[in-house]
Image (cartoon, rainbow, N blue to C red; front, side, top):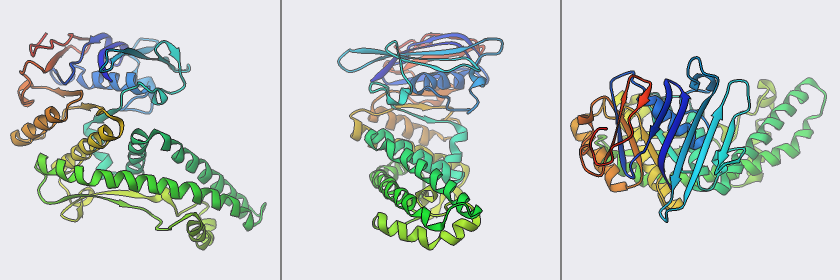
Length: 373
């Protein structure tokens, strides 16, 4: 499934925008502040129903406007067409449409394209707390194996129930043994969640190392899953929880289980988050996204739409060439923003679409034959 057209209305700096991405690589170019990142965000918003930049979606509505809207047209390899639309007005329920019919979540729409995005501030995925990496890893699990997406939600519900019960035990309103049923429920979903994460990390290990090598990350790169529990089954995890019950009661929350797992990105055995330079962390993140793209293509039959914001500015010429070569080889749709078209090797090729962004208020429709519109 590929995006054939994006239309925005009152989204960020755009009064209107109408863009036709190419089937392969699309280069979005323009000066700083012109609205290139806003365009990528609009595409992400239209495909997923949420912003990739802010939790406060009031920010996506153009100043002075009452509502923002993003519409995405899609086509598959057989020529069948579909459409997604997202309308958002502050204070109102977000409207999500799939082929004109209301839906609760775009993430559950079968024809929705998978989307992977690189933003400069996504380096927090490498540098930041484990919760960011856990959440990202769970998104990959859900994308690769949609039937497993419910496991994380079930675990989160069980964890919330156990924590609430811990508070009641601390207050003396219920006995300690009341935790038994929730310990088993938490452990049952926890083992499944941990194993789902371990499986997808095992799939990512080899392509991550290969992508890091291709991009020029010096030394051996490695992904390593670090589960909090090594329990072999649910009963073993229940035993671990019971061993830690006194400390849980003292703190007032569950301190052991998959909600404390982590994913380590390593170079020469050392964590990039601690010992990597900004450039190395950037390459590590790119390698992770490219590895995920390969794994998702194998699992779902097609690679996700890849959105890369300002990715070339901090790469040297060799690494730019390596990234461009990798994108061309992997196939699928990719959209790259840049202030200088010359920073994207092959941007002048006939099969590369180019979109010029000017003034932060309008976008020229892509010229698919490699000429600026």
